[in-house]
Length: 330
Ligand code: NAD
Image (cartoon, rainbow, N blue to C red):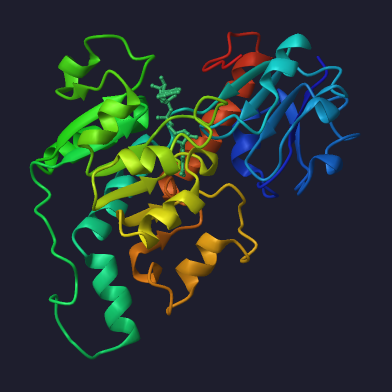
């Protein structure tokens, strides 16, 4: 039997030791190391399966050239960088790796929240600039976290893991997620908000954990921020497009928001000319000490990276052996 061909489009390069170990005699594997979709076109025509990481998108342009492909695995959770609808039309299954970082992203969301709400980031940022006024009195009053509400948009895997962590800190947890069935709230002891507005009105720390879809694009915007109580915080470890960071900046500048912890941006990496990024970097800007920005690393730990890589290629091997794909999203 001739060997199948598996193409890794981006991010991973040689040595592809783990992939070869798992695929064995089943398939040859090549890495393109592409930084744009154009570099993929012409390289995937004979691929039986494609492994896509996060540095590029696969659209009709490259998917239409795949004449053998059975499966595209998005090695990661979010699959907004692959046109899964078009892949479906072409008979190609698209799968993700939904669980490699569930706990890690939840830990990061809670870490951002604690750094902001306990004043840890503010004090570190301010005192590093100037040793004068050594102490906490220059910081606006810090309310106790216990008893305050952690507001989750999207009670899926990560939203639930974050909710359970916030509960362990003594917080109340409320969520808005129209797709979650009744009873989940009771099973994990959180409160369902019947509308986004109802969630916002009671939330001290707002943490979206939904995918980026037309419905969730800028779900955190000027209007939603204005419905949060004064002094609220926002953290975003979901997708950059879910939160309008210009609105967040306006919220901080006006004093309505107390701070923001941002792991994901609409343009990654940022160009540096964005107003939000300029405020974060400029020590003279009043929002400077109130913003944390991380380079889309909420998921990152060594074990998680390995799990993502192994589970992605295990699914490819499964399908090439004629078994049913796991975690199909289309
Ligand atoms: P999930 O699919 O388990 O959960 C998403 C939840 O959002 C679901 O319960 C769904 O019903 C809900 N949802 C969908 N549309 C909604 C809407 N309009 N309003 C409210 N809720 C809505 O996904 P997950 O694994 O928990 O991932 C959550 C997010 O985290 C995704 O955006 C994913 O891309 C992102 N993520 C980020 C990182 C990182 O490093 N920053 C890593 C992994 C995942």
